Image (cartoon, rainbow, N blue to C red; front, side):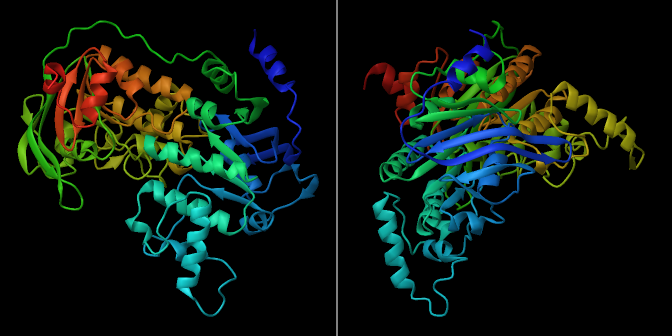
Length: 524
């Protein structure tokens, strides 16, 4: 069946008898050089969990920002329970019962949970009876299973708990329709399951959930129906999630078949490029994070590092790059000692770094694509011209990378902050890989990306392996690690539990919970 035939079949599926609560008809939204929504139709039924699926930059968030009152559409109309509505601000939307939980939380860290929830409300007006409002917040929290201490400061909370606060803010304001923008992008697997339990409980109470995502497995697990956007247009509308395959959804998202498992050529690794020897380091709180960790990566191989988040992965990447002090032990890159050396020292010796936080660490959001891609080459010819930067050469360099890495942006003058997550990651990859690195340190390189972008990143890493680079891949996606890695180390509480070469999930799982490989193999 062709894509157009499949779309027609999906769009023709009969709707459940529940009435539509939201209808967005012919929505058009333009930004300079970009048509974000192209006559998009979107319908949500009362009391359902409806997934809005699409690639990075497909127009999902734009469409929902219009519904939440953050943007005004250029054309089209919105019906709320059959009546036309116009929102000039998020306050208008929330008064109509529509609230949005954004991917990047909007909380004040120094305030308590209750204080954050009350911010911007008309009540209390003069006298703040905090204990009374703590009780009200606790009641809403208990009702929906959103466990959080109303008196805790936001900075003391985990990422998952902060998300609960954002949801509580909307529920406390009376939201009946809740828009969740990429809600699982920053959550651990355990937190994701807790969120899904909460969303199902809310839907059971009659709340309507719009779930923006590009994670196919999660959409199939949580959604009643799915609408798919591609390049601003709807390619499937109100598809029942049950019975849809991951391959079918991926094809509707990206317009082609997507390979979920890439084949890699057999290759004999070369000399040791990265050698981490008995390294100790502390975390930001001054507590032990790495405790005698050792590993090595050779040229022409991808070595994975598996582990539950918070077991020292972040600290290890920062020690290797020179961003964190190594208290004991050594890090060698191509035979040279790089531990406790300036960051530039490793860069000059062929270290490429793809950080976990692409917004705050991997890029300068307010600078252009050109400025971001020349950060490692601004002082080299042909971009450097004496003490000056040759902007003509820099622009040409950026345009070449934009084309080669398929970065979707109007021009190379576009600020990085205006790019989708997938396109921003392509900018970072273009900058790092164009320098022909000896070692690529990739930390969560596909987190928050859609299936098409994930395949692209994985192909780039495999191409670098084929070109002879050493790749250390730190990821929480076991499927990705097993698919790409030649060897996998497992880290637990700052120590290596062992390594596997056969991708044995049972062994990896046991090591991730603290059982050394030696005990697993001997059965102790």
